Length: 396
Image (cartoon, rainbow, N blue to C red; front, side):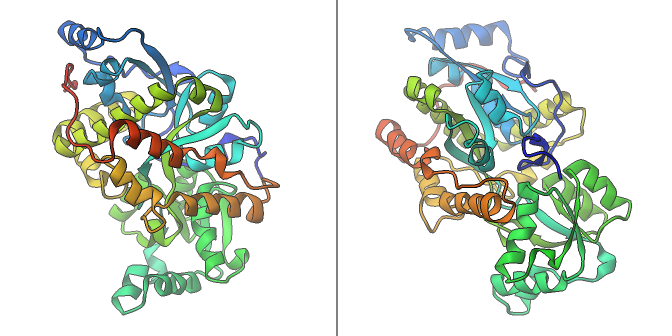
């Protein structure tokens, strides 16, 4: 078992490896900008009495790269924000927030949930990236196991179909990362089906080495993220359970500290305002943004990522609210597809009751989302369309 402070066990979108040392600049915010672009964005910020510096810790995943549109198109500057991005190994975001190295982090809910007990200054600010159908339990085709989709085609409800798949898995092995949300994804439906955790055996590995083991013949099943699922599907592996069939979806979004929030409430609302514009802009200019993200991703990581890959997942495997009204329906209403309280409660069940890595649950006061939602609507309104004037351009 890895030590409790080992960041490798955290929730992983498992998309790409970190590409630089923690705290190093990603170098994306000005990528490809011309002198005329810079002059235009400077002019857009001329009305600002002062600029607020916000250092955002992130890893250049295909979803988190959406944040960089605000710099490329001049919107952060127009909102009087000087935003810079710091590349950190995925999972180190709470640590750099606590150390003061970063002001904001793009990360998922367990980061604050678990690390709050070491640093009560940490807060989850606002979720805007729902990992709705990201995870999948993949099986070897030679096992001839039926999928939840097949059971549902036979007339079973979704929950009955999930339980039927769990019944098939008795005595099988799964490659996952224990004490991590990847284990949460398979252990949650096992418990929900009324089975003991040893219903399956566990091969404890990180996402990348686990995939390598699986491809070499180790294990019966594997918990996959988006790119791992795509690779395995191409090789004929079978998706037994996907997305919310496994567990409530992880919520990616902005994390910060209470102290930074108290000192910069207006600036953080402006950051969120730009984020919603970035999402709407991507919806309306999908080809352009897909080309930009694919190029930036490939340059930053050395991995191949195509515009078609981006379009395959955008608003399909991951969901993005386009404004506060959309976020209300998806995240803040109890009937929403990603109601935050369900995900928060699952974190508590996992870390406190199941793995015992925490002795007590994290208070909901560490989740600011609902109060930020009200503050945002009061300032910008619930229903928004379009975006501010574009004063920059996306590198091609």
